[in-house]
Length: 239
Image (cartoon, rainbow, N blue to C red):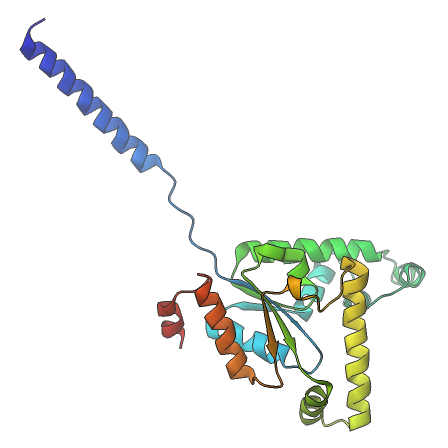
């Protein structure tokens, strides 16, 4: 075989390989767009966790889910929202739920609610760009959440804030705080079998005695930036 013919065969094969590489490169799936952040916020009653969640949602254009989770489960299960709301963040006996279910001509046991809650939170987190307030989302998602925040404050601070917000008396606000804390803690203990304030289940704990909403927001954004969840240009463009 002549040298010229050999060179032509080699060149033809190289051209073929180049065409194949170009074809395969064009067929490679494009990388999926990065989903928006997933943040969970747990809080003591009156500590300002809700204000922080709303500030984050506004700042980063995120969906905020709290009581809306109960509404969504009620819609998905075709149940009366008032019945489902009784299951949220509190302990209720199976017998009482059975009676309530019969009265509403629907039977919806506590374990069904917990299963639905996990399904809804997981599916919303998979889409990204969401803030979950309470409902044990930090425990349901674990490391799948980009940042798990706990907001705390002294009883004095919480009582004063709630008095200003609601106009209730000190005694009424104290009762509200005590009952709400007990309901939320009972929900976490019953469903997840852990203490609600266990530090290892959070990435960032904020003390509202020393930080107002703006300061807490700054700390959350800084933590997200340091972990790579956000980059500084994004923060500047959102400012």
